[in-house]
Length: 277
Image (cartoon, rainbow, N blue to C red):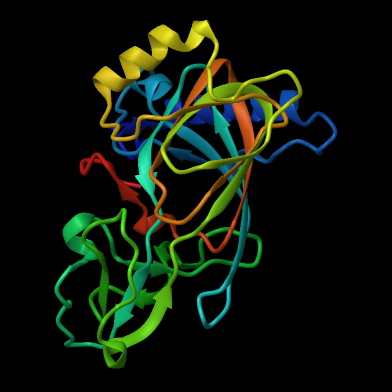
């Protein structure tokens, strides 16, 4: 019998990933009550078919809450988990516009499905942050085969949609704040703002132990940003919407919290177009 796969990762490796992420969670937050394994999303980004590949590129996510009202406004909270030296690929969060059926994208805008072939529409979420399902199928607020869903082509320049009469709903790209609580890592970004750093730490200069891993990551991955921010426990970093960013965990791995405006992972813009979220 063929082993069931999760985004290319064999099921037994996905189980091992959840186990290791849960151990990280317990070390980082021993009084938080632990975490149910099934609440850990294992994100492979379409980059991993073996455990060795997943150790290099991947992420564990606990969605605490995703709240969006009928205007697309709300908030999100997540716990992000990275294994030692694991890389979260470069991406940004841009405005997404739902247009009425039959509308044509305005100049400078592109269909989301042309950017992400697996995009099926804007997902719905339950109150506990889990994706809403109809049986074994995802539930959508707006399906791509019923509406025209677009983003700006240049994801570094947010701009309003020029034909307001075509817009049914706008989902602003999220802005987010990260707080490191365990381990450490390097954030690749150009426009983030360090809100707070631990006393005696210079976040603009990663420790020497990261040098080789940073060079390897820049060589092997698609990264367009130049600035590096070292995140150690207590570091707070603000990323405005559309800010491209990537993250490389250190030798202990990393656990950090994300507080953001509403999340829409299915429409994240990755620099490497082969990536599937």
